[in-house]
Length: 249
Image 1 (tube, rainbow, N blue to C red):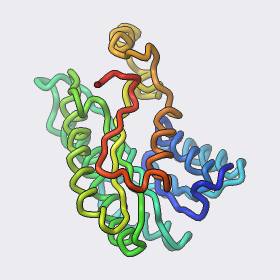
Image 2 (spheres, rainbow, N blue to C red):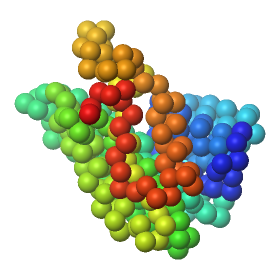
Image 3 (cartoon, rainbow, N blue to C red):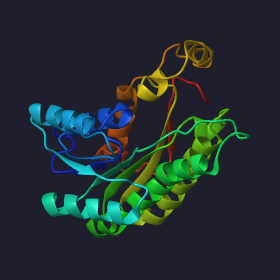
Image 4 (tube, helix red, strand yellow):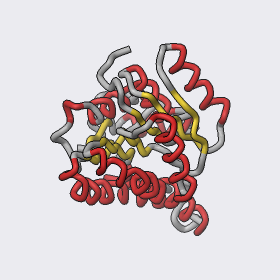
């Protein structure tokens, strides 16, 4: 374990698997206490907590739906009550309801927007006053290359992820004078449960778009996040960092 984030408290949404899990493990390895938010998969979240504690870190579980503001506010209160502060927020929770626009239901659109975009607003709003009072904080929002270039069958997801970029820049402008940075990371084709569900044919086509010639790993994304939440990134805010092997440039 490193002491880079020693004394810092982090809140990671969607922390039970994939990119969120990798980020939580990395922040804990860098010395932060990590609150693991998840919506339904208790056993997976408990595995992440156990892994952090086995390595000598501190973690707590905070189950709840980020799409509901009152729920998020209670979770943040719980973390601050236990650990006295909150320094890092990683807005990573996300869902997909893919379909062609002509077949996409209103519910498919609304659910993706409410979790992926409104969830970012809810969590950020819930920590803003606290971080401003502390005169410091790091917020990293997980967008996607899809938010930069669009994707067939993902109008809802792309709209949410593009919205996160606009939200990030606006929040960065509002909070910069109080020492709070807000940045977005746009992962490309990353090897997770979400991409494992894709057909081999789709994967082949996507691989042709990646100059680096490989899929990314959740750890590739976690490395970028670890930098953005560190003291070294104190003068970086309102930025969109693509972790995509050159897929969108």
